[in-house]
Length: 569
Ligand code: ATP
Ligand code: MG
Image (cartoon, rainbow, N blue to C red; front, side, top):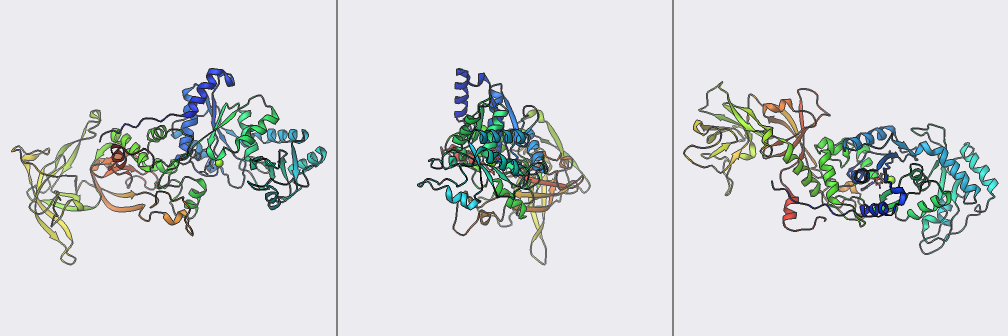
């Protein structure tokens, strides 16, 4: 397979960092962070952010923190914390120091909120959520001040303390920044900084019943950790003014800056934890690590390597405008990686029995097979050949159409690494008429796959020896959705209506060459002519083999590229 050369696009954040380094901003330091909320598993979109943040730290000799943005106790869980740490490490990155948690800053955040109150920059509001929304105004109309906006500092301090002490119910009061109810950026119309939420937190337990909001927590957490470049996705562009407002009021020693980049969107996929959670909790997928999921753990189980995901993230680049990346590029990237490294094996997914009539009963010939034509160092292995074999059902046609060059009655083909065989007869089930066995002869002079008299055959088939074959289950995966944009709003439909009903096909009774009995779980092999398949560690113990198809051999991306199409759809 020819490698398609795809140039890494430019990264505007690098340009910003290089300017900052040149002018000595942030004292020549580069400190980034990856700030997941532990409310779900990481997906390939997060991988883009991880590669960007950790990659910048690596490039500029800086540091990258892992910080859990855990301010919403009702949706978060340690299960997610552990999975996120595992996934970041698996992708090949190590965070600076211990991981951080926004919840570690709750006391500091509280004290800073008290400072804002004392400075007359925050107040306790007792409107309910609906009223707050109504008072906020619209894009065309300014908001109205809450009747509680001018409470005295003393009253605000007292109420905020009592909010913390648990005297009030959820929603009874909130703490708001006092900015400008007529501000053209609605986010600056006195945003909520704290709310009451009487819920146990996975780390702080019942110590708190008020929790800080994202916009208050995030910038302060960045400042506490002395982050220099706080990189987030474009949806937060309007939040930047609030990020700056909070930090400007507090004048903390470190002053981070926020930069936004375009999130990854991938065709035939959804990349939103909220949606992925539905697929899992409604039983539409077989867990977060279902090999069809675009999660990091799903891709890992599917057979994706960390290198391939990092290469993918490098190729898609970092831009300021939203776009959709063709999933074929992701598939191309793993194919390229596996083509270099995966051992070739023979496996028959839908077996058809073949009896070689002139091959003696009980005799076994060991034939040498190449492990990886792309990698001479991978060497060779021996594959047993015997009187009864399996080939793929679709490699035989009793009545072959034009241009079908594989096996048919009276026709000769090559068995890979073995011999030429000729089909001499067909055995059918008398009841159903189904073909159950082929009778063939072989030419011993063609051992290794070439005829000494120079005669040619038009097809080479893969095969396994029946008595040596190991039985396996193979799962064929296809795209998760039938539509490139399952996310797009369609009247009366949800994204779940576009799930591909054929995204998984389970084949039992597959026959693998004996070397695969030693398959290492998590390892990907190329099954010749069929695709790449990953030995599944999860559902099967010793002696029972399950393989997940990582990707087929057909590279639609290479075709798109060669036709000179743009890299994005
Ligand atoms: P989702 O939209 O899937 O719920 P999120 O943004 O709520 O994701 P977080 O846990 O807050 O999830 O994300 C952690 C970091 O990953 C954030 O900085 C966020 O900007 C980034 N991120 C999330 N999704 C993507 C994506 N599709 N492409 C690039 N970065 C992303
Ligand atoms: Mg988020």
